[in-house]
Amino acid sequence: MNASDKEIDKIIHEALSTEEAAYYDQLGEQSVIDMAFGVFQGKNKTIYIITFIVSFFLFGVVIWAGIKFYHAETIKEMLSYGAISFFFMIAVMGTKIWYWMQMNNNALLREMKRLELQIASILNDRSK
Image (cartoon, rainbow, N blue to C red; front, side, top):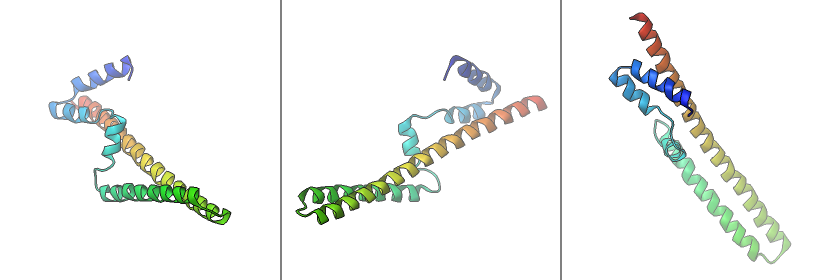
């Protein structure tokens, strides 16, 4: 956030009522850790938790197949365990990409709420 953004935030903060200012502060930018844990809130938190657990299970299969790959005695076994490891790693990457997309979606919704609040405060000031 540069200096002009801070000035705009200060002007908006002064124009808002106490309740609106507290809500506006709550909508501020989050750290990556806050965003990661923020995904587990809301009405779809059960799906996110299940997906997170499934990704750990899939990664466990990748580790298991990797160990079996190195202990395999024939090329056929090596190819089988290598393929299992490869496909399950792609599944892990898919779940992680989906998870990061949800984090991005939440950040975008947060910015939209900030814009809605700013527009509402401008319209409120004009009506007075």
